[in-house]
Length: 288
Image (cartoon, rainbow, N blue to C red; front, side):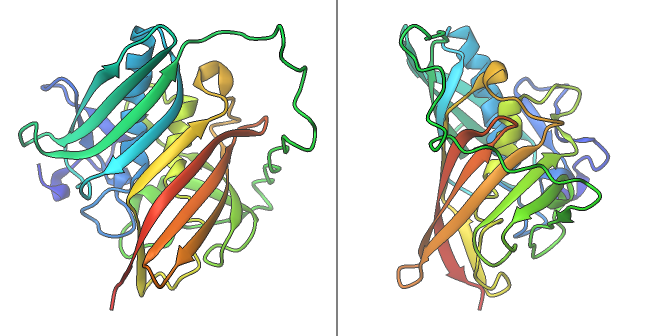
């Protein structure tokens, strides 16, 4: 299936194939800022998260506490095959690996991989403090009134279905000029006809840490994410509580121009406060 023939009407980033197990058709909502033929990293990261969440429950380690994503190749807007397998199974900790493949090619054509640390679910209150020190746990940024909020549109070189799929509201900072704080929600589901979990909503946005905190000339310099690691403070359906699917992000980017590298990082918020922490290794390239 070519990029021009992918579904354009589906109210989701992906539609599940009716003819092949584990295959998802990519829709126009996945299109990222660099090319109309390539996906933004958020939706495929969330798709791998969905596979890991499902597998973690089957191994009795349902809490996904850390995921590292490795981008091997740019991800085209094509049908994708998802696979997930255990690396090591344990009573308290299980390591899982999920991969995305070009569905039209053989198993060796891996595009994207996530390695996850999953733990058992246990309530530990006997020796735990009633609450963290007030100065240690910041409150989430206030969700602005929709009528008064300043909306942000992600920078793009072309049609950007991913940006169009989000409502992004600025809370602090100036987009394109360094650190910012935003609230954002996806207007579409991850997979058509299937519920999007709070963790998947966090991952849909998490790959935008650099895109919401860059301070270079977007039209002359590209800043590509080579990887992403996300550590969850609170996880699972009971741990992350979103208000109307809104996810908060406090993001900043630091660059080493003489080496052509950068580091983007973000604190992710739900309605109660910080729920996850993100880092991206960046590769800077001139467009000239």
